[in-house]
Picture 1 (cartoon, rainbow, N blue to C red):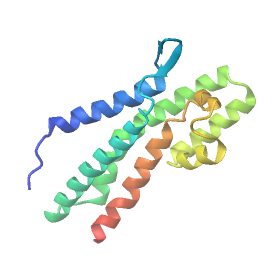
Picture 2 (picture 1 turned 60 degrees about the vertical axis):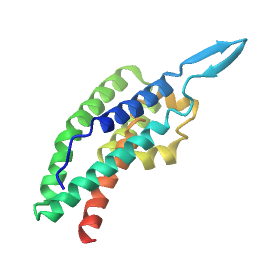
Picture 3 (picture 1 turned 120 degrees about the vertical axis):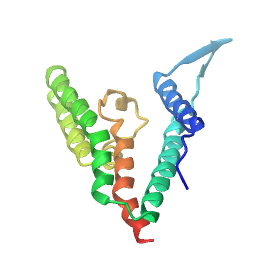
Length: 165
């Protein structure tokens, strides 16, 4: 089966990303002195994005396996080239800004989250150190890397599992 571009998948990705952005922006509307959050479940966009990514990655891996052209090296190299440069840039900028703007204890927390992000373990780091929805979480510049860590853990574990099947 040949992979055909599906514009509706890109549309669904856009809806997922926008819902997460709207959720994190915290937009509210006041009607009759009652405040309503706009898109309070927007964080579910992350789940939608995971499902789409899982579908696409599984399809691409299975196609390569069927044609005997799957290469773990090529697969991981493509992921690294796509994700690592931006991750390292965000971590570097965060560390520089944190060094200038943060108190020592805050900078220590930032350093821990940066190290956990580099090794794709920040989902565990933030689970152990704090609640994602806690008010203090708004002040953690690398909090968003938890979702990237989960995605990378999927990329590390799933292809060998699928290949063996």
